[in-house]
Image (tube, rainbow, N blue to C red; front, top):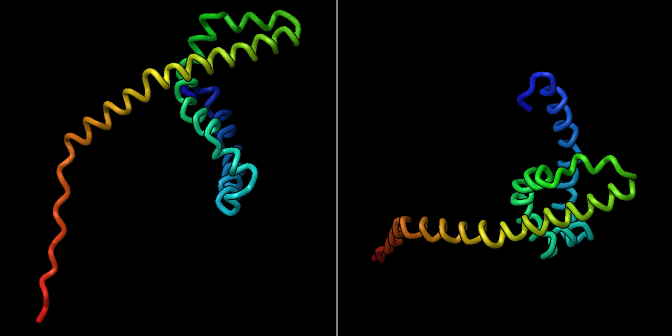
Amino acid sequence: MAWPARSRYYASYDAMWVLPAVLLFLGLSLYPRSALSRFLGARVTVFLGEVSFAFYLVHRPLMQALDAESWANGGFLAYAGRMVLLVALITAVATACHVLWERPAQRFVNRRLRMRAPAPAPAPVPTPTP
């Protein structure tokens, strides 16, 4: 987005998703027992949402390491098959990063923050009125 020639394009691309996102959130809040709400609340879907940040972090380096851009030279089916395998590989690496790094780091930070947090002040004791 830092490229001057692209900034207008990206801003309009992002704005294009505002209305559908608002409608999705509104629909999910009005109908919490809908099939889509149940799907988005399923354990696997929630877990993949947690893994998504690690996916974002590792996808580009893995694609570059595997030279995935050169895979487009073959036919469509070969390319599609390679992309499915690539997404599976990236998901596996991202899951490992999430489980072996992110979660332990989060627990460590949470423990440290709890150790530094001041004890809550005791609630005032009401005095009886005669």
